[in-house]
Every structure is written in structure tokens, then in C-alpha cells.
Length: 373
Ligand code: PLP
Image (cartoon, rainbow, N blue to C red; front, side):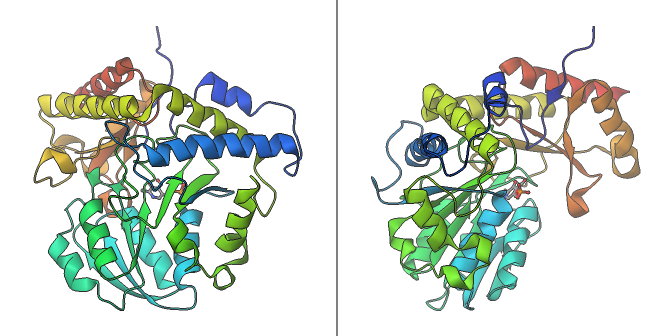
């Protein structure tokens, strides 16, 4: 009997039937009280996630200090909005690059400001000494990706946030594949703006994203220097009344509200623990069959707990990788290959969202079978 389709890509991830059903409800105006109630439910759930993403559930954000807002666009829009509202008129950005999404942040920033890249080969950790050497009192913004989806490596958020704050630079942290799935500490890491996507660890459908802006950084924003659609002063004003400046993606906001309420119900400590256990199971399964993890990890604490990247061994590498990926797809499982120059050299799987443990086992088994084809 053919098994059900299993989506193991690092986003979009599977959504529950309840999340999917929320998108089917009768349409309402995005200016109605009914929509505002939906937006507020999504904000409340996200506030919980932003505030309590620790293993013991202790608060990680200054109580009531910042604003959670939702954007009609994926996290790339949030990344650009954060940078453009802080340095749209020019300035100095230090961008940390050790994967595709760190590079994306640098490319965005290069459209607005002078950028110093702190760059190491994809899959290697960024040394804090290099960050210290690059960030100066003239630095306005430091950008970093917390969980590099392209390589499966966790970046040193606490250390980089400390360096940024020592120089009074704003720390903009992409938590796209960690927020809602792993530890994420706004306060302790000195994060000024955090960005995440719907379709990753929040397990909502793709198309919208969320952002947390601390109260302190609100004063630094210059919305008029940003693209019209990304003026965060305007977005923040509207978020206070549970609205977006422009027409909201109503069905996606409804789905987001249900998805984050599921997370509140599970609780972040339980969700983080589950993600860590499942990522460890992926790693144990793949390494037990003789495969090597891609990330050049000095120790296990820098390995992602949501995305696992594995080097393809010689027989299924390069041009031969296609047959492997076809073999996985024929078994009704969807996984990802490497991005950009990593194409044909790695595969990536995700345990983000609400996957049962049986999905992890099936992912490992399917990879093993497809390697043997
Ligand atoms: N940042 C990270 C770490 C990601 O993994 C992604 C998507 O995979 C993005 C940003 C941008 O996502 P999108 O294409 O949804 O804008």
C-alpha cells in the first residue's frame, strides 16, 4: 500500500486540517471587527512564542515592551523592511554570511547601505572574533540568520547580539526556521528586530510573515526611507489596532491564528524539546547509515534543531543526485536538495511544525532505501 504524501522540506511544512479549514471560512472585510479579532489572536499567539521560547518557559522579552506585527509577504519582505527602515537613507551594516539566507540579508542591505560582510564558507561557524573586528561604533545594524536553513547550522545569536549592543548597533535577527521551533531569546540576545515566516516552524501556510520590533528600536525607524509597502511606522500604527496598512491576506491570517494557538496549547518548552528530540533522531538515523552531516560543527550545540543537512555520498552526488531525489519522490516523500552552489552535494530535511515521530522514522528509512536503489 502506498503511504501518504510526506512533506519534509524545510518549508512550507505540513499544516493541520484545522489550519487548512480556517482558510475556507466565508470572506470578511479586512477592515471588519471580525478580521481585527483574527489579527489579534495571531498577535497573541506570536507574543507568547516571542516571549517564552526557552526550555523552561521563562520570559525572553521585556514584558509588554515591543510590538508583534504581521506582514502581507514572506520573510524576505520582513528582512528588507527591517533593514530599509533602519538604514534606508544610508548607513553602515555588518552582515554575517555563512549560507544562502545570510547572503540574502547582505544583498538586501547592499541596496540601502554600506555593507561589511563577515563571510565564511557555507556550513562553517562565524567566529565571534571576526564579528568583533567588523562591528564599530559607526555600525548602524548587524544582520544575522539564527538558524541557517541552507546548511543546518545555528549561528551564535547571544555573542553577536552582545557585540552589536556594545557598539549601540541594532541587531536584526532572522529567526525564520527557529522561532516557534527552538530557543529564541529576544532580551538575552539583545535582538532589536526579529523576523519569521508563516510556513516554517509556525506551521502555517506560506504567504505572510511576522516580526517583533522592540519598543526601543521603534524610535529609530524611518518609514519614509523604506519602500512604501514596507513603511514600518505605518505597519506599527496599524498593528496597534490589529490591522495592516493595505489589504490583508484574510485566509492566511486566519490560518496563522489557528496555527499559533496550537503552539500555545503545546507550550514552547514542550515544542522545543520535541523538535530537539526529532532533529537528534534524524541525525542519529542518517549517521548510523554512514552519512555525514554537512555542517562543520565544533560541537552538537551549533547543529540546527529544525533542519538537518546531510552530505550526499559519492555514488549519489553531482549529476547522480537526481536519481536519488527521484527515488525519494517515488516513495511519496518530499525533501530538499542543496541551494545555489550546494546543489548536488547535500540533501535537507525538516522536522519543523507538528510532525509525529513516525514521520522522522519514515524520512530516514526512505533516504536509506533511495540510496540503495
Ligand atoms: N530566512 C531563512 C532562514 C529562510 O529559511 C527563508 C526561506 O527559506 C527565508 C529567510 C526567506 O523566505 P521567503 O522565501 O519565504 O521570503
